[in-house]
Length: 188
Image (cartoon, rainbow, N blue to C red; front, side, top):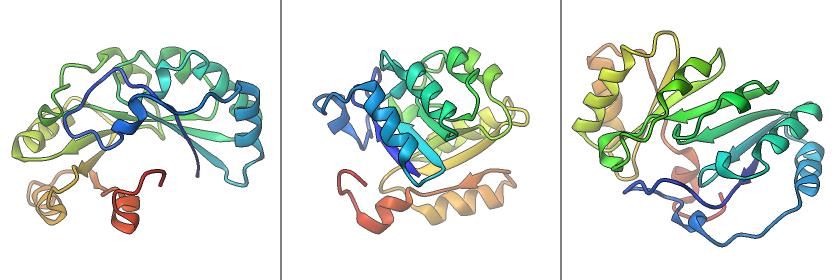
């Protein structure tokens, strides 16, 4: 996967692990960025942030890489209406539903659930039992949408997996693999 990380975010989750993306970065011309992504050997582009969908040229970027034959996974907080982005061919969503420990649990643009399709999924970052209970409650409202439980940094992975098994919950539990390999290193 070829990663494109944008700066800026409209949310301030208490446990955010990419606060460095709130500011700074460097401006890259849209055409240059599309060309870089299009020429990458990877089949998939990960468009992430911050919140990538607040970028002024987000739609044009997604359309450009789609036209180049790439598939794009958009990692979004779920707070921005994804309707105009979801209509782009080969665009898939990893959409957060923010849990109580984030401090942003009311940020979801609920209409987004209607745009999700096969290949998209929602993600719950889980720090504690309250987050777990919140996520389990949500699962009943998601229908056939896939869900991922991701342990927040420092949360016991074994506890989360065993809780899901014990409760017979149909979710994938996925840690942030890059953090297990490289730790808190910026840029991976």
